[in-house]
Each structure stands twice: as C-alpha cells, then as structure tokens.
Image (cartoon, rainbow, N blue to C red; front, side, top):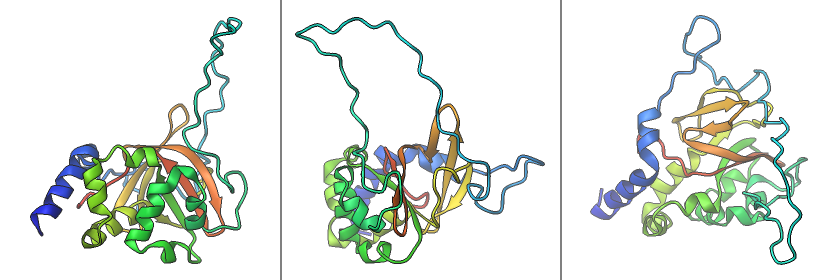
Length: 224
C-alpha cells in the first residue's frame, strides 16, 4: 500500500475511527440469558420509540422590534419521501436532497449508483454534508480519486444494510452491513438512535427501493 494511501487512512482514523475501532464488535444481548443474539436484533422487535415527550416550557418575553426570536435550523433539509414512500430510488432521493451532495458525489466516484438504484431493498445510514465536513478536506479529496476507489467502496457499503429497515424496526443490537462488517445500533427512548458513534438526525426518508436514515458522522469499517 502506497504512502499516500497510508496517510489517507491515518487521517481518516484520526478523526473518525478511535471510538469505532475500540467499540466494535459489540455483543448484542438478548433480554433473557445474556447470550449473543445470532440474528440482527433490529428486525421483528418492538418499535423504536422516538422522543415524543412535551419539551419543558420556558418563560418567554415579547420579541423586540430590533431582535426577532431565534429559530433553530433543521439539521437535514426535508426531502421528498420523508413521510411516505417516494417513486425515486435511494440514489435519486439522496441526489434531490441538498443535505447529501457529498454523499452523492462519493457514490458516483465509487461506482455504486447503479447498484443502489437496483431493486434492493436497501437501508442507507447516510452521512450528511455536515458529517463529511468533519473529515480533513485533503483526506476527502483523496478518497474521491480513482486510485482510492476500493477504500471508498468499503466505507460507503459499510453504511448500507440489506432490507427496508424503518425507524419502527430499529432496536439495539449488531447488524451486518453490505460491506461485511457489523454496525452497532443503539435505540434509546430518551436519546434517540445511534449507529456506532453516529446519531440518526432524520429517520425514514423513504425511497422506492428502501429507506435512508441521515446520520451526523461518517463511519469506518472496523478492519480499515
């Protein structure tokens, strides 16, 4: 492996990988006996409970004429198919969403657009542009080069799980990805859903051949 590729991997792991490499694999425990769950435990289990509690009320004051009240920005641009299945596949749906421009470019560079436009179904834990922005820019540019295509394919397919796994199916446990490695899903009613050390910031962007869950970090396979 050339020095440039080694530097690329070192740069990526330095930003993304320490907690992932330590944290995987994580044994998924069944509710009885404490044995390792031999099958992905996010399937056929009680629904993932989103946070539906009423937020605490805070005293409000009338906004002044010169300083209007602040509004928190949405972490992910609402996309077609976010509330009901779209006629677009996961690749087209990501391309139509302003939050997935870098992901779309990466899928093209990796040659995965045709695969993920197929019948599927696929569940994609999709890093947003803000997630990719956490990587060193030189490392990201190196990843998109043809000579690093194999590494890019490995990283992107680590974000894809076979099947159409919506938020109502998500439950804590280990799940095997298309890449071959496992991701550790943690569903907490009070904290939401995380995948390895990434948080799901928008679930259930539904496509014609699967579903996208937007996440706030890029994940690395444990053997990278």
